[in-house]
Length: 100
Image (tube, rainbow, N blue to C red; front, side, top):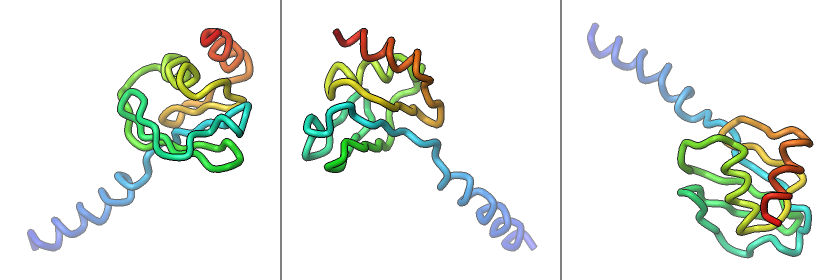
């Protein structure tokens, strides 16, 4: 009986753990996309040739701060989502402006 309960608990926990919130961005200039992985605040970013990038990991911080840190390294973005929280147009504009 205990084994059955343990299996049931694991079966319920695995899908929840596998569903991590999305962390992604789209670079304004696809040519500025790095060819390899870039680590920023613990997040490992990888980009494709279109400038679409995804990350795994990363520190717990507000999405707008994460955006500023990423833009400072990779350049302006047209879309940004940090651990499931997507920035709106005004927040993206402020993020891009902060990189100056």
